[in-house]
Length: 181
Image (cartoon, rainbow, N blue to C red; front, top):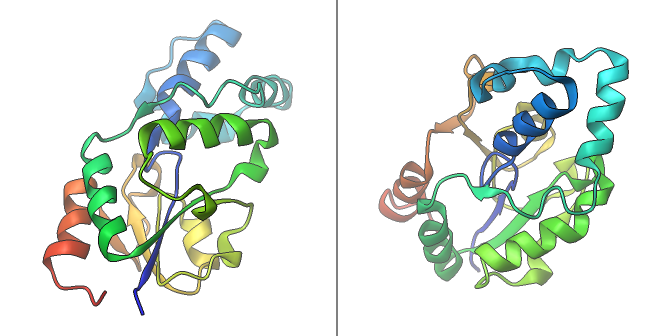
C-alpha cells in the first residue's frame, strides 16, 4: 500500500501573502513589504481593519490568480504523485468564499492531480495521511502523522518538526532519501 502525503496550499504551493499584502496596502493606504506582512502584521490588525480585510479575502475571485510560490513545486508534486497518494489539504473554512477559486487554481497549476483528492477543511486533524506539509504549526499540532514544516518567517522559532525551506528539499526528503513509499 502506498504512503500518502497531504500538502497545504497557501504559502506552500500558492504565494497567497504576495497578493494579500498588495490588497492590504491598497485598502488601508499602507506601504508594508511582504516580509513585514509575513512577520505578523496580519495577526495584529485592529478589529475594524480585520473585518474589512476578511471581506477582501472572501471575494470569490481573490484566491484565483495567486502565483505559484516555488516553481519547483509543480515537478516535485508530479513526481510525488507517481509514488505516493497525494492530497491537497487547504484550510478553506477560514475563507469560505475561496472554495471555487482555490479549486480552479489547483486545476490550472496541478492538472495531473485528482480533484477527488482536494480537501477543503478547517482543522487538519481530519486529515489521515502519513505526512502533512504545512507552514502552520497549529495545523501540524492537530495532525496525527509526520508533520513537515514549510519554513516561513512566522514559524522560524517552531521546533519539533522536519523543516523544509523549498520544494527541492521536499523532493530530496521524499524522493532521494528513501522515505518508505
